[in-house]
Image (cartoon, rainbow, N blue to C red; front, side, top):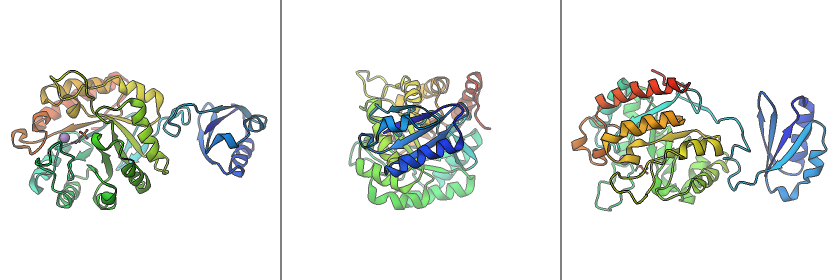
Length: 340
Ligand code: PEP
Ligand code: MN
């Protein structure tokens, strides 16, 4: 894989000639027509293409092989930020997307009540797990398809699109019937069959970082999804395991600027799983906005003490509403915004 950097004054026909040559070799091309310069990504085994020949074509400034193990996910390949629209919102753009909802869908009334409260507080996307990856087989496993139906009802009521987890390839078609964004949980980050299936689905994907995964491994998993032609991938930092046990995980705030530098993909922060205690969620969320996150996903429950999962890290709607106001001020301080 390599990129062809065109000269600033390269003409349309010079660009087309490069694309045609790459396609003649049997490569796929990806055009980034930036304001400053045009970059043509050439996808395939670059050992079989003659780099010097391309470099001698008119209008070409230089040809650079992509050395990073992740290619399609890399900023070298696509210098401009990936953005895509979802229900009137632009993800990855100047506005920060706010996703909120309970850890699990517990009943029809619980998800609808929470969805309305989250929307009133300023959320744009509703979260809620119907298929839950629990550490214990004896813990609540989620409501399954019934939960998906309640999520769809909550979308009807509030107009908010839905992000929900899918845990196995065979269930991707079912979850796609109800969801707007497919969540890959931390425990499934390297489930390659699942990455393949969500890649093929062409649905937007929220890819959580595995709890003991390197940033590079996480980007390689995004690469699996991208390699199936699905470009709508969001990275999600949700905390990693360290020696510290006071909090559930350690929020790797570094991962935000690192991922933004290495990749063009939007990055979403999950301060709820990163801290595991509701008292610390607001602090971590605000830090994530300041650090450059493109979105935030937060667990909210109207009665956290009754929650069937992750009650201890769930914010009550009033606390969440206050946090959205604070995040908006931080967003504006760093040249961004949160749509009201
Ligand atoms: C969740 O979002 O409720 C969840 C299970 O998250 P993670 O996969 O990050 O643990
Ligand atoms: Mn949870």
